[in-house]
Amino acid sequence: MTRLKRYIVLAVIVMLIAVFSAEVPAVITGQCSDCHTMHNSQNGVAMVSYVFGSETTSAKDYLLVGTCLGCHAQGGSSMVANINGNPTPQVYHIDATGDLAGGNFAYILGTKGSGASDAKGHNVIDFGKTEDTLTSPPGHHDPDGIGVNITCAGLTGCHGARKSGSGIYGSHHRNVDGKLTTADQPYNSYRFLPGVKGLEDADWEKTKSVSDHNEYYGANTPMTYSGNCNICHNPQGIITSNNTMSGFCGTCHRNFHVTDAIGGTSSPFTRHPTDIILPGGGEYAGYNGGGNPYSLVARVARTTVPDVPGDTVYPGTDVVMCLSCHAAHATDYPDMMRWNYKSTTLSTAISGCNVCHTSKN
Image 1 (cartoon, rainbow, N blue to C red):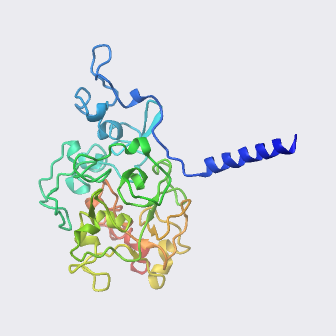
Image 2 (cartoon, one colour):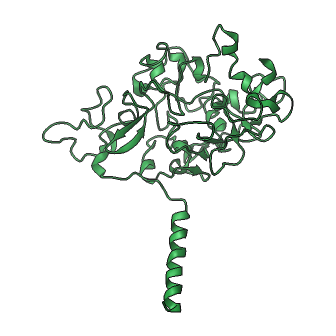
């Protein structure tokens, strides 16, 4: 091989390494007809590819053959469904082996768990559930008049651009998964939650373990609200300014998780603080029984998004967040808690608390 040919081969190898080592968007693949239809008809019959309730025969926005629930809430026996060869995470299912990271709306409807209850999760009107107890989000922050009847996506939801007329539009086609540290658009934000950074588990925690789980981004101090609405409201819609999961929750539940005249970050606390460092001394140094293995019950956030999931928690460095105690969608326990804190058995009721508060057992 001549010297020139060797240089050419070397140059090609370097280019290939650069391409395949870069952050590559995990966009939707496959035929357009997997998700879209031109005429909502096949052989004279309405498209019924994705099934949830009565949505199978009605036309959908953007020529889709299913809504959010049609793809992600089929109510089947697996927490990850196979749709046209594509693994699709399910937020509503009856899989007895567990749930994905966000929880399972089936606990609200009573098709799984200990019985139906609106108190077990977010009541999303896409499921036909309207809120008949609350008049405003817990934490009392609703300047846009959204109310308590929320949706999966859009202005009244969590996923996608949170402004009128947008929602999840375009995000699936441009999706970037894995480690998300840009988070300036829904498609490059953690789980399409605008502005949120984190590390997404590849199978949505179907096979979760101490070393196989999502990683969440946290801060060492909560967002501060000083009367300036623009910290969350901008032309892109409602978006958290500090890029944390707790900051995102605070866009609706502000009084729980944002520092202002109502709640602070020093004792005496009016509410359990979030986006603060798990103390490095005292009872907290023995997180999760000593040795500090990561707990899937009382989780932590990291002040730097890691490249891979960590199996160890570092008191004095890692962060307490909303998802330390709650799941995002629903659980089988009141208030979306990760454990049954209302159990009449004391050890069960405080089992999650004891992960951090180790001297209280």
